[in-house]
Amino acid sequence: MEVIARPKGGNVDKMAEKVFFESIKLLGGLKKLIEYRNLTWLPSLAEAAYVIVLKNEAFKTYKEIAKELGITEQTAKNIATADEQEVKKYIEGELEERPREHIAGGIAKLAYKKLKEEGKLDEEEVEIKHDEIEVLGIDWAVHVLARIKGLDFPVEKDQLIERLKGLVIKGKKAEEILEKLEYPIKTPAELLHKIKVHLEE
Image 1 (tube, helix red, strand yellow):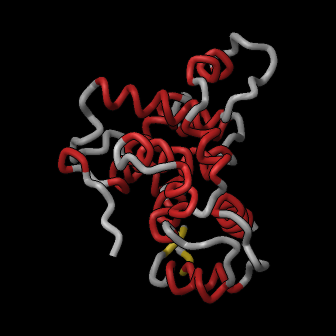
Image 2: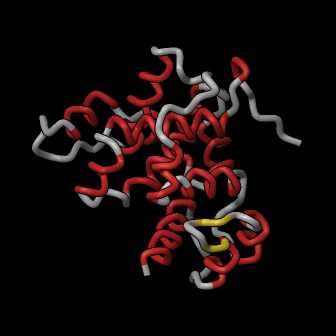
């Protein structure tokens, strides 16, 4: 059985959740994301949060991260090596053109560094209001990623049902949602996108 490093008493899932929520705060909060219709960023932010935590806290290699999250090594590397200062300039409107950096990766790195500097990465409390997140229905992305960690992609329906059984996403059973998706699903990001599209129908 693989043991995930739990640095300083924290665990990877909780830390990734904190980085994800802090990333949302850095972007101006949930209301801002809704206002600019940028909720499509959420799956990428959730994925990036996991990559940053696995790299910096669990000391995983790009190959190990890729295998664990079902993404390519290059994607893991692009996220982890994104120039967060360039991304910061971009989201603050200082750059006219979109930088070549992985945007979600840069935002997750900014969030991670902020939490680390403030000593909040290992705290038990998550500052963002969970009820607000649940009302908006976006916390599911983190829960789905946590459940599918280590799953090899592309995946078929049966594998996903086995992992997500019992999970309720915006009032719907995950199993019911998965029955209606097209397979195979190539990446975790594609899975999150398909679930999101289904929920909006």
